Amino acid sequence: MNHSDIIFWNVDTQIDFVEPKGKLYVEGAELLKPTWRKLTLLAKQKKFKVVNTADFHYPNSAELSKNPDFINTFPEHCMADTKGADYIWETQPEVSVVFDWDKHYFTLDNARSFREIVIRKDAFDVFAGNKYTDEIVKLLAPKTVVVYGVTTNVCVDFAVVGLAERVEKVIVIEDAIKELPNISLPFENWKKLGVQMMSFEELAQQF
Image (cartoon, rainbow, N blue to C red; front, side, top):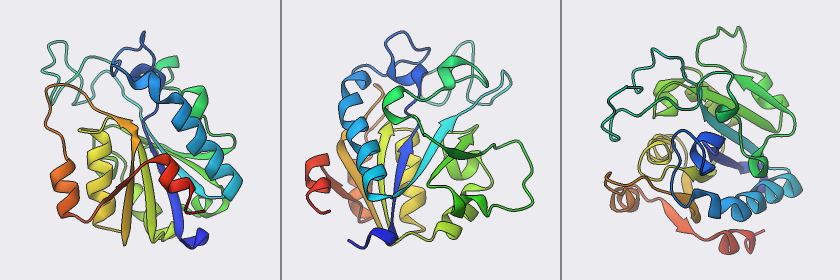
């Protein structure tokens, strides 16, 4: 792999999803913390850019409901400017540029200047939930994107499908993703899209 052609894509490793006391806790997600930490350190050591996506909701968000079905709607989580919207320590960006979904930017050139980027979103799909995501991917122009985070069958799935349409190769770290119950898993579709699955150890061996 050519290092300059690779970026890491950290999906929603936020307190509300990962910690057992989080507002939308994904059961077992906290067990992935060591692997997520290894990915964070690998990216730093190899100087890979990291795109960190984050749910960042307001009370009127379309996916929030007081009577959620846990498929298309969910209870309040990752609310703007709350602790639950923060990243867990293991994936916390050190110095990053943040692109909010509800702000206007005259230029996105900072996406090139910083190694770590935060894209906040108000939808499962980061490409729909932040209008700048597509342009940021075009600016970074990666050939390979390494994806990990939560949840496998919601936001990770949308990220993988969206990236597969835009870059040559998408790799999902199979021991660094976790799913929600009651929603079908996306693996068969990923396979059709040419997405490659590998473990963290397999990834690390390639560098």
